[in-house]
Length: 72
Image (cartoon, rainbow, N blue to C red; front, side, top):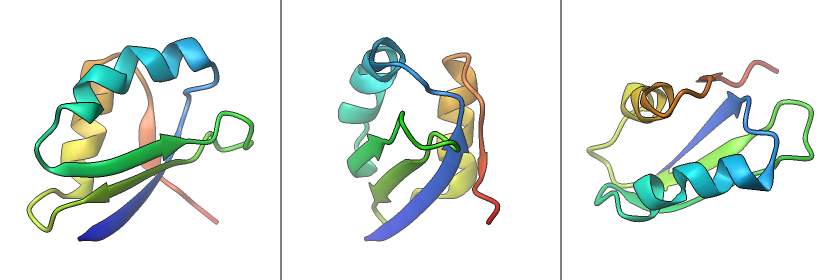
């Protein structure tokens, strides 16, 4: 298992609900969460070893959301 962390533009519970079916049913994603209160709208994804950052970014872009590397 690996943990991937991203900056997003998911800022409401409704937006979380929009991506929930996709992320909850993805065979490579073990668990995930979005902190809509954080300034960077941080998304944390626990994934199997076969899933990489670009896979998650492409899933998010496909749903119309921004997703990128979290810059500290």
